[in-house]
Amino acid sequence: MTDEYHGVAVGLADELLHNYPHGRVTAAIDALPGDPTAPLADALADELRGRGAWATRLTLGDEAAIAAFRSAGIAGFRAEEGDGILVVDGTGLHADGIVDIWNLSVWVSSDPEPDPRDPAARRYLIDADPPRRADAVVDISDPEEAVRRFSDWCVVPRRRR
Image (tube, rainbow, N blue to C red; front, side, top):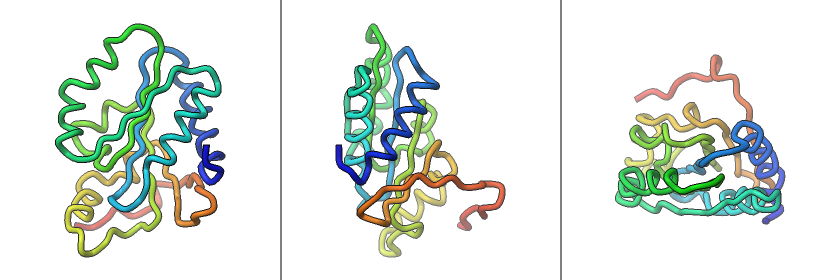
């Protein structure tokens, strides 16, 4: 496990195992393009395995992969016998149609504003509002240490279109 994600992964594993001690459980690590999701997803899966949980990893790289997972992959995972945790990373995991399948969802961000040259990223932030939909928000603006941020969403203004 990478040191910069260790503390966050421990906290997320605590939360996940406390709230979902049994069954087929899903966790999503989402970010805008350019912000890495795999390191935290790997760290979380490693932490879960270190505690004796059966955990596996999946990366969904684009909308087609998300659509395929939504239509068949999640049903296959849930149909399997026994306890298990699927840790998924990618971009777009808080979008309508997929956000509701996660038992735990995490938004990872190094910068609260998307690249102005990327209209798809801006549209995703406006339409899905991932920081609000996420169960956890992780700030990776300091490359030495990821930090979970706890926000009072009653005070934070909603993004304008």
